[in-house]
Image (tube, rainbow, N blue to C red; front, side, top):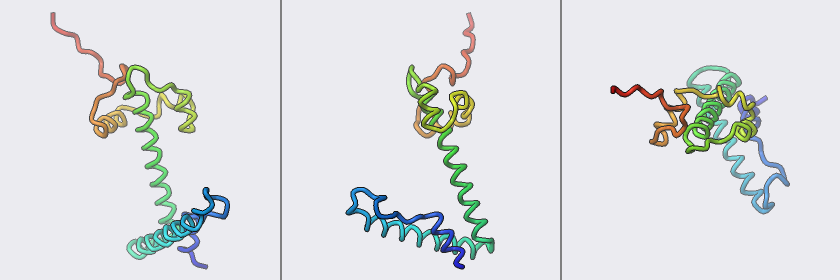
Length: 140
């Protein structure tokens, strides 16, 4: 049994004939996947050597971190679509379909920290009235 080889095969599956279009690109796609698999195996081996931890547990931790990063990216993209897209933010239904969430879940998927992150990333403030702080009364 080759634990690291098995984990690399799970993490980087090789394309099968018919998976790649146009078909003439299959050899290139196969070579690229084989290289990615080899790189992943070398990286996992190095992490195992450095951490002296079970490679399966390392791979699971890496997958969890990737999932958390993807969830964070989805929250940022939802904040962008709802808060930074002019007077007409994206509607809840298409965002829900694209993100795999419910429309009501979109409303609570992101908060002020995600809005602040998007503000920093794109260098402008939200367009949405909902994201703006309440107006302060002007002295008379």
